Length: 438
Image (cartoon, rainbow, N blue to C red):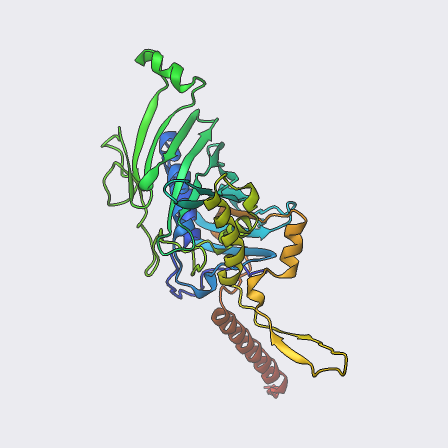
């Protein structure tokens, strides 16, 4: 599906912009571009990682954001981020969810302006089930295979990012609980810094921002303090609430406006009304989410689980079977078609009967064909923050950002054309005034 590019309204019209994940992520890219200190830039990129993780589970206030299985999706948009020193900032973004591994998201699609910052997320999720023999607990783990790359062109820095796994405990039940688990990391070779983050049980987060070290952790502990890797900050807190840092210079301005200087991340900041982090997520009955197409890729990963290759427990294998049988029914598919079938007997043909077949219990044939061929959904999300001077802004062709704006623009053009025709007709019908000789 192709979407039209978007722009903010012109002529001073004010429209309240939704504080969705696109604006949150792009604003953090702008903050990183404005930070002069390399340590500050690394901290802001850490905030980007936490923000994306929270948006995976954050709900949306738009009904159209309900995840559904898809054969392919392509979204292109453009947003005005506002004025800055010497010009304006514009966001170009592209979102792709497809079975084709050849498709590449490239949000940069302009002829003028200077690229300030880019971020590309490329994920190929896969899933597996787990179960314990004694406790009888079960869970499904979705691994975010791939990662992200953040580029800050002004500083010629590139940050590579890896994400933790998403674990849903007791899925398909009322006790379902989602959490992140495992290690995440950010590395910037140009600045010589890295962030090591560990997502632990009960939504806890621990980590460090330090110099890139070539030594193992065991060897590091044996070295004297003067020879150990320099640690700039330690991170601690909860990814679903707040994360703070140590060793913050009190003279520096806070990372988050009007907040304590040691606060690195607040999950509730800039969160729209009616949107929240839903950890009690029922993957069998998902509602509107901030990143619905990423969840379409998650659905593909869940449907690709082979119960026979799950963890070596009966509970894990049974969970794999339950996911394959129940997810198609509740994952946004609402097929309700009729199929005809002829029945004959030895004596005579019986009348044709129409039987209602519940096609929601299986995926569409086109998607099933892709999965039989070993295909998996790829998800990509790409941002480009571009700086434009006022002259370059004037050269841009305005694109309506909504049907209402399109109608207003069309009406305005029609009125101008009609006025131009009337002026031309009036000039043709004018009777020339005779000149009087004296």
